[in-house]
Length: 466
Image (cartoon, rainbow, N blue to C red):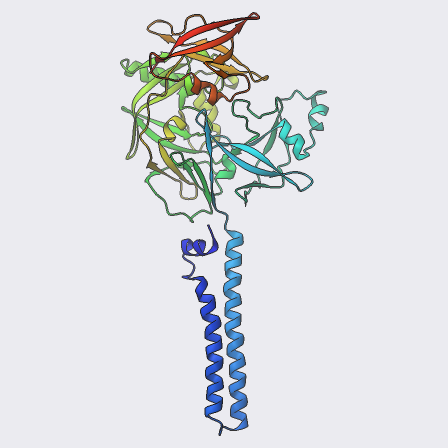
């Protein structure tokens, strides 16, 4: 957005470039008029002529000063306002954006960030930290070797998106040790946390595949407004939704790949509505990470409708997460430490991507503007659950059930998936791999798996699981 549009948007002044030239030509016209008056009134006294000249100089100085003030205001406003729109990509439903991060020597490098409204900390991959010049010796001093899961480090001196510097002041930065990518499911270097996003007016335009960041109050809201609760230390936003007769409080988490609640909440919904479609096995984008406990046997249910005020979306899938959190507490209790109020779960991008979603943190409001038609058939695929390994390969950790039996014959947990049709799986992102398993019910996908140093070719049928 150029400075003229910024001024108009902010309603500071009605100012056009021609105004500068009008002022300059006005100054020349004034000089001509004053000179004409001096000539026509040649009989004026020397004192009067001198007064006219002084007035002419004062007017010229005044007009020049006004012009300088205008330019100063424009310059100040342009410097202070941070706003911009950049393209994003989706992989396994997760939103990724290309950025630049400043090294210790002052140079800049490209980095891909995973946008994560559900996490307040800035996580950096080990490889990115080393390239930025961040000292990781404290990890070795602490353990004797680099095997701690994460280490808090100073935040890089600069991060910018589309040339716009982002404010990371006060944000905790941590290095995650491991392979080259922070999470090799996405091939990203770091995340863009909620504590940074909360300082802006944010638009996640899923239909248009754009991210917009602006100074709070800059953008005119669009869509259906819903009240939200914001935790102003973590930046995590939550809204209340209605499922049948149940009211649930869900945090907005576009960093996950799917919506999920605690296993207890899902069991309660199923007890109340046993006719709602339900399956065992997190397949498709419900296969959130692959390395969470028992992901291959998680329950998944399709809700007839989720209602958030005037916003309604039909046939939304949701996962029931088991209670594997520290000290044996449930998902809601564990995550409620980061939210303004107790939460039951997370509203993920399988819901959010049907909308242009605008977060107004300052006024604690969320705006939903419906985009393209929502495709609820996100579980038409070969029913296997996968875990990405450090070397870039994918291991089968579960096989979904269909009508009381395993949906894929010939595949076993522990198999390494090598190919799906012509796609070489090793090194591909999780989104690429899962998308290759999709199709229309009845389609056949040719899987090549490795088991005990032997390879097997398997014809696997695409099924509609929910």
